[in-house]
Image (tube, rainbow, N blue to C red; front, top):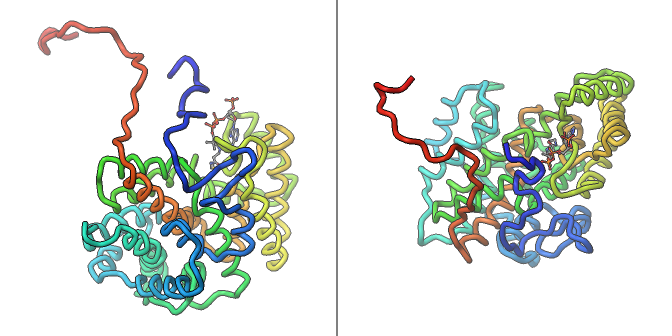
Amino acid sequence: MSKDKKAGGLAGVSAGETAICTVGKEGAGLTYRGYDIYDLAEHARFEEVAYLLHYGKLPTQAEYADYIERLKGLRDLPDALKAALETIPGDSHPMDVLRSGCSLLGNFEPEDDHQPQVRVADRLLAAFPSMLLYWWRFHQDGVRIDTVTDDDSVAGHFLHLLHGKAPSDFHRRVLDVSLILYAEHEFNASTFTARVIAATLSDFHSAITGAIGALRGPLHGGANEAAMELIERFDSAAAADEGVRAMLAAKEKIMGFGHRVYTTSDPRNKVIKAFAKQLADERGDTVIYPVSEAIEKVMWDEKKLFPNADFYSASAYHFMGIPTPLFTPIFVCSRTTGWSAHVMEQRANNRLIRPGADYVGPGLQSWTPMAARD
Ligand SMILES: CC(C)(COP(=O)(O)OP(=O)(O)OC[C@H]1O[C@@H](n2cnc3c(N)ncnc32)[C@H](O)[C@@H]1OP(=O)(O)O)[C@@H](O)C(=O)NCCC(=O)NCCS
């Protein structure tokens, strides 16, 4: 390990320029292409944000209508991909399914130099919910679902495929806003992974496949699932208070808290927490939400750590009947827009990303033939 642990992980290091997003910048906060996250969460639909990220501007009414129809037309999957999804074990992690699904789509529909790369971005955006829920429903319910629905939104499409019926307007809107909040976040680990891959002049599907692998870990996107598993361990606020104090005393990390860039709060939390509360009231919940708030209080009192976007997303998804293993895949269904924007930005002004390292290994050794080694 490096002598200075805090210097590791490239903390505080700028790794390049971007015109896509600001995270925690003084006077700007969290913005996508200059638009404040609170304005987007209040006024936009996720597909407008996707268009903004993929095409660089907000769509006009006509462009938006056209975009919705285009995305709807990209929801079906090749038969060969459906067949392959059926062979992936039902107890696989759904993130592994998306990672493989993305990679397979790259075989069935390889990126073609003559097609605009943004078509691949749109195809992945439309296809991720389909591939995830085709596999999920096949193994959970033994049905081969039709992945084409008439829902106008990714959120509606996702909930429709999962539950087999169109969602309420409120649930669709909560998921829609959650997708907006998750869509983009500058040079986070998965986006940086995508850029590193794109910078070698590799193909679009490889960049997104790598990003899914990076997102899967509990220090990144996997935190929303880990947070739900923690919340469900407790049956009361008092038990949560006691349990989390014990975990902190044992130097355990509490998933869904803290952030590499934000120091006092995550702006996305305020929005998703308010929805989690409304959903708790709708469900008549008297355990999950109070337990969540108790964990939040201990973390602030003991560590001055705050919930990040993942913590209350967990209970919000739970209240909408979404199974915990699908939480991080929802992040993929959203963040694919940010990843794609970064792949295109990297390609537009590319240079191989290849940093150096401080060598801390042994000095020059003299060669010993195998027979003479101890
Ligand atoms: C996000 C995260 C990886 C940022 O990490 P980082 O900038 O590398 O910070 P570190 O992991 O070095 O943490 C700094 C200190 O705060 C503590 N800390 C940070 N997050 C913590 C958490 N969630 N629970 C308990 N302690 C935490 C660390 O133990 C460390 O304490 P120390 O200095 O006594 O060793 C980290 O906060 C974390 O692991 N959070 C939980 C996972 C999570 O929610 N990820 C989603 C991020 S959006």
